[in-house]
Length: 179
Image (tube, rainbow, N blue to C red):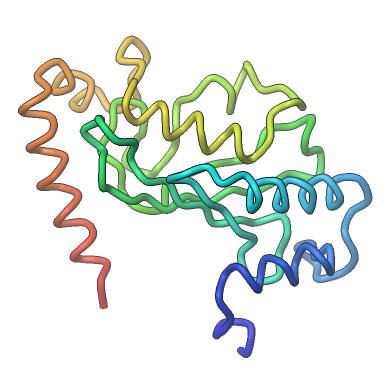
């Protein structure tokens, strides 16, 4: 219970120091070390609009936040994501999903993301920072030729209508999530 009252940054540092894994034991060798390193790199990067921290003390489950980039229809909108790292990471891609509903041509209603670097173009050279920056970029530059949400892909062709619909749905979704 005490860990629920800590701020995410201090919980993240504690997780990185402990090398926590899902079972609560020591880090799983090189995977745990790699995730600890990625956490520290991300925290020190100074990149605007992206962040991620381990969920509680679990180094293999993270919660990320992406702010829509300036100059895009997603500007000033904030989205939470879940990142789950497999035991084969970094040779196997993490599972990344939107937790905040995201109306976008490449995101389905369950939060699944159609992004090549999370699927067939995955490389062990990618890290959490690269993933978050790629998703942030995807928000403003969707691949409408490969949509998961065909309604959003069609509406994207009319930027004014898309932005209006996006703002309406985002406001409803965020207000319904507030206590």
